[in-house]
Image (cartoon, rainbow, N blue to C red; front, top):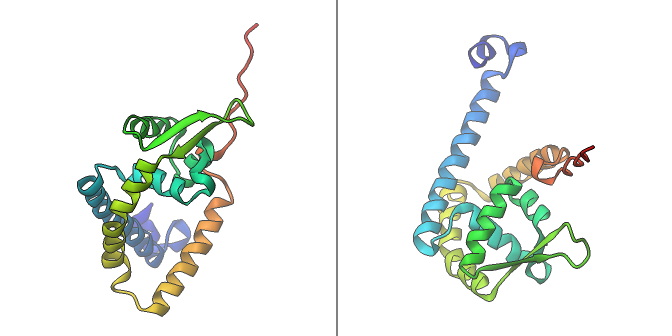
Amino acid sequence: MYDRAVSDPEAGLSAEQLGAYFALVEVGSLLQYAVDEHLRADGDLSYVQFQILARLTDAPDGRLRMTDLADGVVYSRSGLTYQAGLLVNRGLITRAPSPDDERSVIVTVTDAGRALVAHVLPGHVERVQQLLFAPLSGDDVTAFGAVLGRIREHMRAVPPRSAKPRAARRKAG
């Protein structure tokens, strides 16, 4: 598919699109690896666990529905449940049934969770600044943000699986 795309743009991605795609994937992987390495060393957190804590810290009252959290971090419900369980065990978040919807679970960041985010955030920001933004001018950052924003909006037009309603269970009999 990719080999033909270089010589026949109608068959797949053009050489320019292919180069942009591979650059994006590589940059994302390199950045995530470096950030994950820092988070594990500084806070004993995985990248996903940090995302969970950071989103909760930024949320009103430090609380989100589990489904909204899964959508925000683009993670499977089962994977998020596992990661949340690890954070609960460390006292960094709590989980409780929603008072509004018995099927929903509300996740809340604890004071210890907020403190850990505050502890790892300076190093996180430093890594992102150093690896992602250092080679860019102010105009580059503006254009980069605008392009990524359009792509994100386009991709979010169809919600990730984690945000889609669950299929209704069939009743036996």
